[in-house]
Image 1 (cartoon, rainbow, N blue to C red):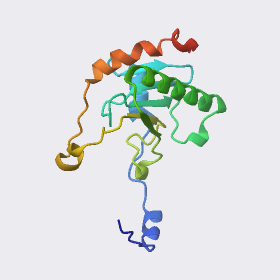
Image 2 (cartoon, one colour):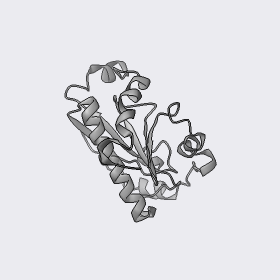
Image 3 (cartoon, rainbow, N blue to C red):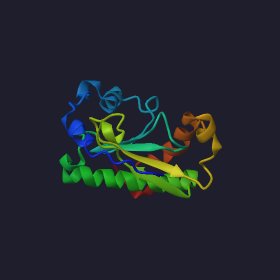
Image 4 (cartoon, one colour):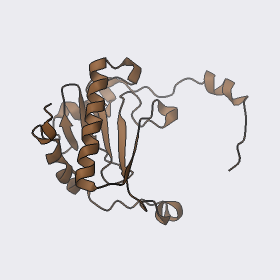
Length: 172
């Protein structure tokens, strides 16, 4: 792969106005939490300060997202309690995904801001994507098609019991 350097583009990039504002009334996460229909919205659990939900458009089976209840985009603006809760939910999610889906690895991360690929830029969320050896095949490369081997509803039913407060000695 070659790298094409174009340092003069930095002036344009830095001067471009933000073309997208995500405000709380239009926030997907805030709307789903307000609806309180967790099964329909694929919310696996709520804690005092955060929640875990399945990604409706997953990169792989078991793709979940962890987010604070509070509408905040920047992890630097999380309170220490919110940050600790998100890490606790991440650890809990990994344990449950390992037990139920037996992945061989994980991709974990967050996209901060639209240029970084955030689909919902105004509400911080951390992605956990289970991975298996050989889960990347020719379909995405040649056919622009991703094969997800289990329906979202079936995966939700497999994962949901693991998030009950009685499991793993964790109470929300």
